[in-house]
Image (cartoon, rainbow, N blue to C red; front, side, top):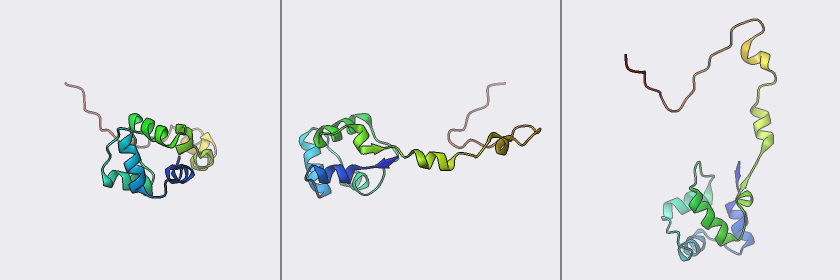
Length: 107
């Protein structure tokens, strides 16, 4: 995904993050200067749907205008064929899954 906040803000005549923050506050979304800076300068790893709703209302756009899909990146990261993952005639390769660690059930 590509985050397109600054381009949509520029199309709406908003050139500075402080102006965007002021308009968000007028629409009912109080946002810290640090969070606004992160939204303005980079791609957020997460965003609350309520916050996205207010951003879209202020910029008069749709979520798809702010979050642009990049299928070519997904295709580039995808393995070429299934044989690469399992090996022909072998048991499947088990790869660790990072994230939440699951607890062991009680004995």
